[in-house]
Length: 479
Image 1 (tube, rainbow, N blue to C red):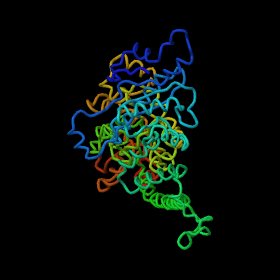
Image 2 (image 1 turned 180 degrees about the vertical axis):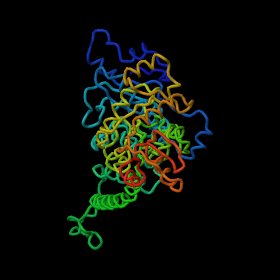
Image 3 (image 1 turned 180 degrees about the horizontal axis):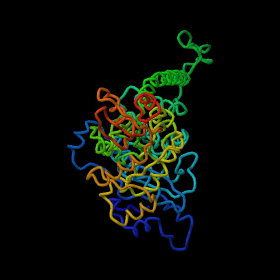
Image 4 (image 1 turned 30 degrees about the horizontal axis):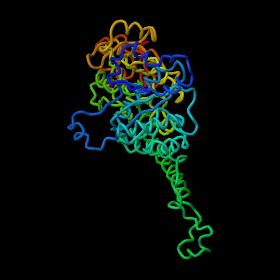
């Protein structure tokens, strides 16, 4: 197997990337080609050179090797996915030492890579001093055990890694409960025991002399753990359900006052929180890390005419998002499903923006939000050239190009949001006495004012307003 020099993946020339696919060896022997199928991916190493960064993190950084498989013709997509896995690993607090891809049509049911390639992986792990292997997919329990038995270090999969990041970033009581629920749902089918150490069943041992103290309830440790997890899952579901009325009450209050909502959704680390801060002047946590935002953040804004609406910063999505997380975070994702408009933020500088668009829209379909009006915003456009913008425009002809860092395109995005917000139902023309300034304020906050004038009798306003406000203004209608 050939070892390629570690260098930045972004600087890898296309010709070298194609060469890394593996040229058919002399004679075209399929067996020789298969021997070279497990190839290293350059540019994934994130090993730290400055010890102060380790001290800053104040934790023991795991040293990991990443692995993945891909069918013929999918090498480029597999490299992008492995690069994202490297970013996830860094966010979880790990040092990526190496990345390996194997070309094979389907995963091996026993060891994911196959026993021969797993043995090669064991040698690489020993060579690099890694203590963890992370697979770029969700492993079956048997695959994880089979691979661990060969490589002799801990093996985790993409789902476990994402759950670990969520556990680190959850801050609110509801967020922590949602993460724990997802973790337990993932753990339940993966419980395993080792020999007699987890057994509480006496079996025939009592008769053979072990006697008093050896006769238990006839339940193994795994069975006890499984029963405990089922009970804990039930309790967490009840807790999350009990938190739902408070969230619904806030949404109902906004609905009662006819305050439209705009959800900022998109791929993780696309810059959603930065965009919210620039649009509203909020001070939401911004971090160059995946899943920095787990709890929905709602901030108020106003249109150019003074109409109030809200922006909601939501949890980011990622390719192959674990179904446990989609289920556990369904209550948080409801903020997106209930929004009047969705601003779909895409990282313009990402190597696969089309994949980001596809992934987010799949999740939006899962939460029944696919029918909401959508505005695609390509963020970080200050990092891309004119040719890339043309490609992105081909993906989404009506997209807005913005930069949360420089402020480019924000006014266009605001205008598109105001244009897309639902319009109030009824057109009214009223003369409001000067002593009813509260009604004038409500008209501006909840309606769209097209004309305002002043007479001796009061303020004359022509506007579109919600039905409830129109009823309250009936006594002041102009004939």
